[in-house]
Image (cartoon, rainbow, N blue to C red; front, top):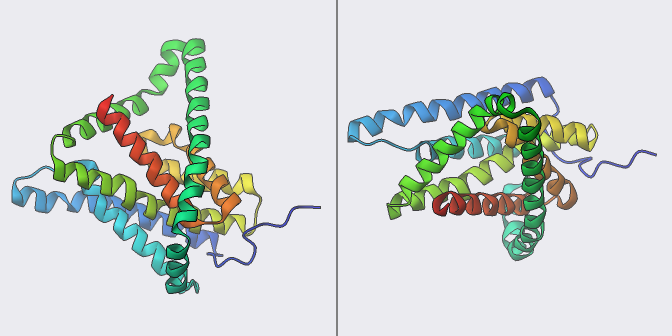
Length: 244
């Protein structure tokens, strides 16, 4: 007998066609926000880093996801009270799953090392966009670390705005919508593929972490725990890029 979905009965988006359209709109909003941030930057004679310029896009994504869920009947005031009452319990859950995420990274590292060993330059060429994106992000983080306000803005973007927006959209809306009707692996793969595609050049190394976030949400059904875990992961990633 097939196991009952833990998301059965949850308030989700039932029209998959419109769900993909909503995803396209979210992507357009994020790209547009990056481009529009160039206007005040040029007017002030500044140059915003990608992390800084992405904050409005993350905020708009979170607001769009919040509005859609509110339209579907999610009682956000009640949810907020619940999140506040269980904040420490959710943090403990996030910390409990942090070693598992490290295990995912270790597994990915071993797979990549094996692929480089087997296919050498051919695989290196295939992974060139990932390497270039990683090097660019590391350079940006190191540059922002020299300015306390900019580094604080980086932490706000990476550890608060991005986790909140992405967990609301990719896990609470996309994954939960699929999971209410389909199995875990189908739902986790397609929602994580979309999650990966939103990360551009880092897409190949973002798919598996996305599946892990789905698994955590499947196990706990606590969105705040997912947001905290995502924030912790990004925090340690920022520290690693700063001091490496």
